Amino acid sequence: MFGSLASLEDDLLRQFDQLAREMESLFAPLRSVRDIRAAGRGAFPAVNVGVTPEAVEVYVFVPGIDPNALEVSLQDNLLVIAGERKLDYLEREDVNFYLRERHAGEFRRAISLPEDIDPERVEATYRNGILRIRVHKQEAVKPRHIEVKTG
Image 1 (cartoon, rainbow, N blue to C red):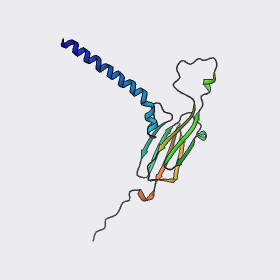
Image 2: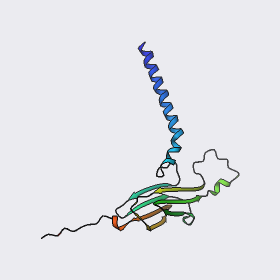
Image 3: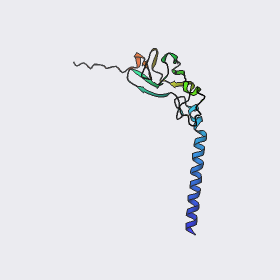
Image 4: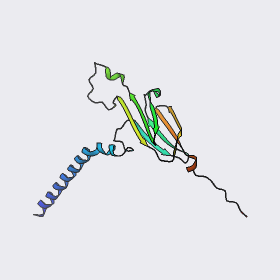
């Protein structure tokens, strides 16, 4: 008698677990829309954002993209990186792809930056497929060393 109750409980837990996974996959795309800093898995381009005492540094991984084709803008503490990834080999008619993990097309990533940045002091450099954007902080908010004098 108790064995059948345990198996019923296991079956119910398994069904709830399956339901939770299905709900997670159903609502996962909506989470990235809710928070501009959150991107869904597989979002392109991949981005790393870090902070130093002097600046906010954004690393955008865009291998194979012409740096002159990238658009970088900053307005109201919102950094936008846009461009297009072209894949010439996709135009071949003699190949039927049955798996394609690298997609082509236009992309746009928006990253919310902290309030203490200086929008007039932005540097962008491209090297080895990595776009590095350095947004300096305002001078007034930088840590300042104050010397303590004696006597």
